[in-house]
Length: 448
Image (tube, rainbow, N blue to C red; front, side, top):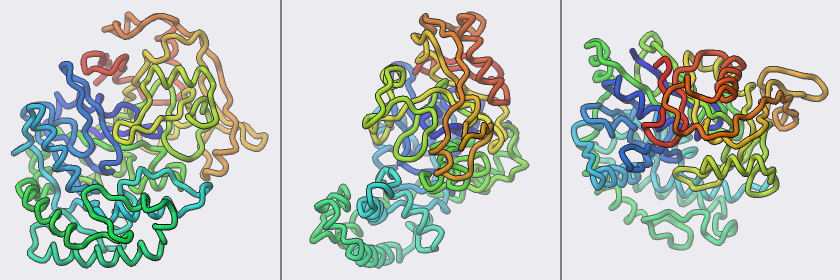
């Protein structure tokens, strides 16, 4: 069975752990979009690993991992990640392949990302991670980007130099030096002179990167179709979440790609007919990182300090795996979940972090919104409308006891089981996995 696994909220739902659990039934694991701005955390056998670009299946022997054409891949981040894998006893050689069509995030994209965000007025900031993802996707659409296969061409470095020169002109236009005392264009590994990138240094960096990554670069579309024809099982892994989708998310507070299930085919080269199942990962509450509307928000680091939200953040260790930014927290939003089910065609939910809710005597669930005096049960189109909605809540009794030691769903406290059942009922689909702790072992497989 070929399965797509997607995030169903604003990202950070625990996809890395669920993918790791599902990998035992997969032969190939394919990352189909996003970049190193998001991390998938996997805790197994007492080791914690954060994977940014390499599919989580790399932690299982005998699994083939593919970085698909829908990804924007920073070669330097990938090299660092490969080295880290080797240092922990995992050698990706012969099991990791990068599509020749995969777009690359270059150092000058990172410089542009930081400069453009810093140049925005405070009310206009998007909350970008500053890792060059947006400019890399923009370069892809404007047909000025580099694909991984370009690293194998003789004129690659010459073209890199040309792009650095063009970027320096853009940085001057942005007046990056006046925005944040130069920090806006700080790029690790590069010398910045007069707020300009050094072409010689960047060319030297990519000369080494191309040599290191050449063995991993391959046309992966024929590989995946041969695997399908041979009856192999393919697991497609997305980053971020539905509400960050460039088309269906809370635009403009979104990422630059399609984390939704439709992006899996575009980002891998498989046909929609090849997809058998969609699994949506969703937390038992809601979180968001960065700017943008968040109807059920209770807590953030700036102006909302509700104790229930703060307790969620503390118990859920709500910090970005890569960015380390604190996440905003709030009650479960069933409007978001229903929307995710509709947009993605979710067959099964993988619900995570139920144990975070253990100490709450009362738990609220957002079942609808009130928008300008009218109750609605659907997701508004615009971010401005979503910012104006008021959540309509129903309340359930909490179970007030520890669940992290439960190994069968039948052994859950009755009130915890009732909460899970109600979330699934409100959201549509069926429950496939229930996660009640961070480790691989603390996962209850119900229907997957």
